[in-house]
Length: 307
Image (cartoon, rainbow, N blue to C red; front, top):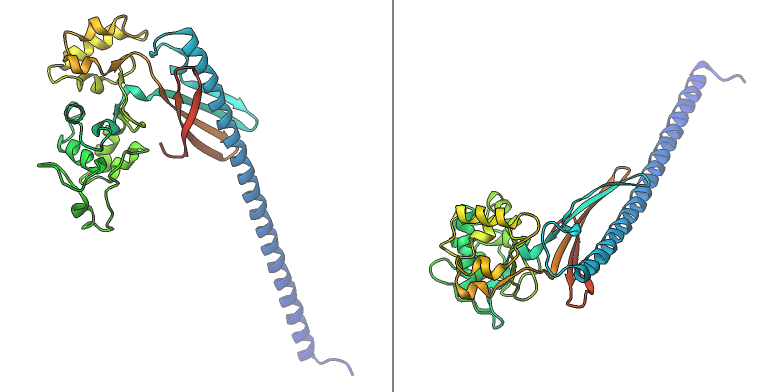
């Protein structure tokens, strides 16, 4: 018996549906396969970029070791202070920069070894904020953020009673910071203010002196309340790229004796920033390096994408 017209129509529609379904499945499989290949490629490129960043870190370690052997001071005219220009690598490029972190104000100087607020450093931080045209009350708030107790300082302090009332609530760390970005969480801090402050502060382990050969203009102005903008401009002109020839002679007449004891012309802490691009993959790598008195250089903090 020959199939009727209706049966032939059903068979045709069934064949079309099967073909469409097979095409959909095939397209889906091809798409998933392409995504898997892309994910794998991205992961491989990311791992490769990370290894390139580690290579740049190792290269800087060698430079810093040699620098300690060759010179007795650290200033902005040395090879480590030069930006690394874009260098070609397989499938992309790498570039970066190095910064002397002791040219910034160390937030952890705000407290002493007992976890109590250091008044001299607190006053310096207030002067730094004023030089940057930032509300100086943030000095007291920052000190309360890292001091060891839960007693809010008067009149600018803030402890858990303030932060637990926020949404979402959180608590103060009451210990030294590992990263200056943690100050973004203190009471009243907004992004614009923090972006202004960040290039002038750091969070280094323990108490550190200021390297005046690399200090920012605002940090120099914060050394003493009598220092004016004109004084800082004169200091920067005298310093140029080769640093001060005699720190004691230059600063003894413009800062107090107790401040003079906190000034240095050498550095132990450097921050490396490396940007690596391979194809469409791009990573930003930060490394905090500590250089010991014998020239040993050790990475003590690494991060990707943030300081």
